[in-house]
Image 1: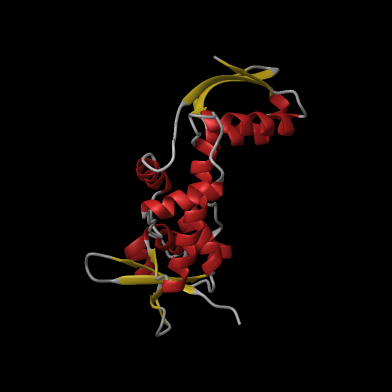
Image 2: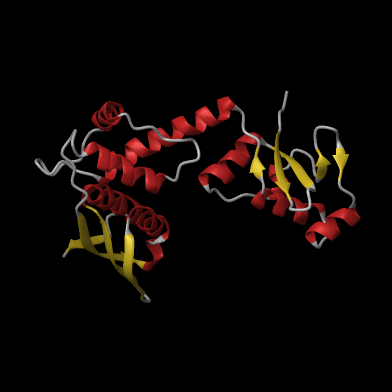
Length: 228
């Protein structure tokens, strides 16, 4: 049996509006920042004043509160501004996902200054547990990364050294390669020529090898990567 989750938006005058959405798709969008199509997200194409009681908002009420009588437009605003009524189990699942993402971020970005190599994820995870680090389900991952690495320094040797790199890629092969750059590096300069895309980026030293391998895969071996 299909299930749905309510997303509620409350206004200062005490009025509430709710929509019912597919919980998995909504979680991917609200918690993981993925793109969405409101029509696919909606469990039913209605905006409610009280979803539990099945009390729908009228077209006039939508226009008064959202400036439109169109259900999808009003539902989009409810989704963007409202909060999901998550269960304890759902919050625990999100927290576990973020924990895994954080461990992988540290293993990918940080390195052991004694060897110049990244720490294996299982070593990072064990050190986080030893440090007593806890991540909340709604935590910002970048903020959690900064806090976690500070706590890890007395336990395992960690370096967050950055490297500056010059990139040169054929323009017709920049698709996935450019997406990867945006994910792992800070793009300082970029230039789109008729034949080649060039850029100067800064990124954690521990990510460089992974980036070089991915760029070669995405461009069929035609990417050029040079450290400053």
